[in-house]
Length: 405
Image (cartoon, rainbow, N blue to C red):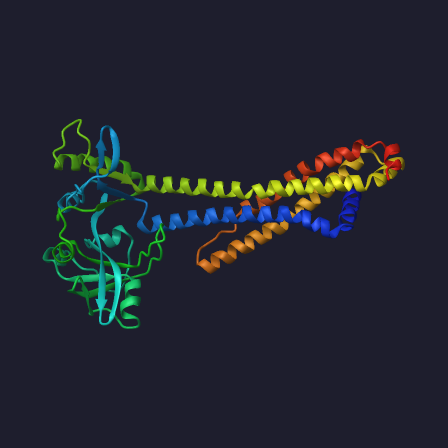
């Protein structure tokens, strides 16, 4: 009986190929849009994970304290953590290493080439903190840091823009009209979380930065500091020790707010991932509106089909077809149309998402969610949009149906 119903439903669908295709198109577009949005959301989460993994999750970030005016928290205050503060944190229990950065944007010049670069004054430990790797040459040393040597380590973007095919090691570039010797290059990292070019970076000793690039209003204070712990499970304890140490060094009495902030990378990762998940849900919800339009299209087609086939329904009933048989036949037609649209939409959605990922050079996963969404949509939309027409067909009186012109 079941296969007979499917056979007859398929014959009925095939009799109106163009109408069936146009009806199926709504579900196809809807499923393809949802699959694309889900894939986009997952791709964003993968990029977020990659960016944070490039820094390491066992990282604690220390920045300026928040300003408070009239009981209302404002933005960041002025820098309050000194180079010596950061150095003192290296001796804390479960701390692997610590570093800091000070930044400025300047124009780099080599020969007739020039390029706007991001200059970072830091310490040798920053390589390990930020998971950077040396491609050629070497990193500057603690001795270079103490003596303020004019050495720089540059990212791959700067190598390409200033030197092209030349070997940059030993070459002299000019920053703010001052000469700096390139002693190393970094392996490429690609774009950051906000689309920024992580390889557009010039690293130099922080002492050199303060002497030659930007002395600043408070030359011994960091923009941001980093502490890498021995393991991720030690982060909470280390964060408490950092807070205690800095409060003691800054002579903050009980009841006085911190003039610095301590944030765990794991907390930041979780917050950003939640934002990415909510964003993908929102995009998928917006795309699913087209599924509603598609289901209305199927319902409309099936209602028209019931009206057009009124005499056929009366004949079937007169020949002994049960109400259940009639209902299941029309319901099956609706589900088959929905299944075909959902399957083709899933294939199109996956193909488009993979094509877009290849074009943009991003990793786009093929998720089981695509299959789950397609099957769920096929069943729910097929049954929901076909139920009313099927019930209408089932309730037709055979005598009235046979009289229908």
